[in-house]
Length: 248
Image 1 (cartoon, rainbow, N blue to C red):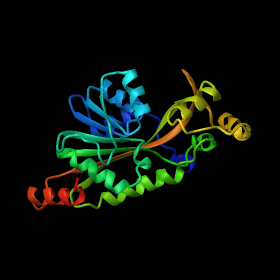
Image 2 (cartoon, rainbow, N blue to C red; image 1 turned 60 degrees about the horizontal axis):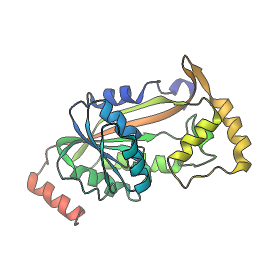
Image 3 (spheres, rainbow, N blue to C red; image 1 turned 90 degrees about the horizontal axis):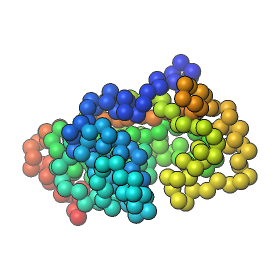
Image 4 (cartoon, rainbow, N blue to C red; image 1 turned 180 degrees about the vertical axis):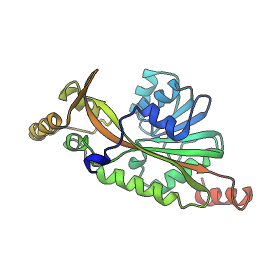
């Protein structure tokens, strides 16, 4: 992006509300919730939210932190959640981790009530945060693949795009050590090679900015909203498609 194309700074909560309105009182499933950071945000916003996470270690950490949500152990493709029971199904920076993104997105549709919405929250790479984080993990291609999957699913006859917003969030960066700890905490398999630390430190100092509360790194993110409308050919066809796509 050119300098003039930099997305506006806003909180994640503000960006979400601009895309979908109030979540207070809505029943929400957060697929691939990790340790529950975004799930707890949704609960604070008033949602009745269930987090789904395939890694038991992350799920246990989410349970330990509490904050209102309930949690289940499972994957996006096979969550075990009840069908047609949710107003929103979220992928909070998790779709790019799904081995088959189309299957994961269609599985999300199974969980939705009529006129329910799938909301995909993904980083936009490369961005100002990418030169820092790439020294530990470079998921740029994965992020772009997730965006392509969303765009392809928007052509599905049962779904239509109803919202999209790219914005800049602030990754708090009081120190490089704090940023490294945050990046490593999301995946126990991540490591920082000591040989690349000087380059990471240089990138960190180059991109850091400061506001009234301290230092931060601009991080570009995007919300995409897809709405499940009434089946164009009736509920019987929708049920048939679901059964064919999800035989379990």
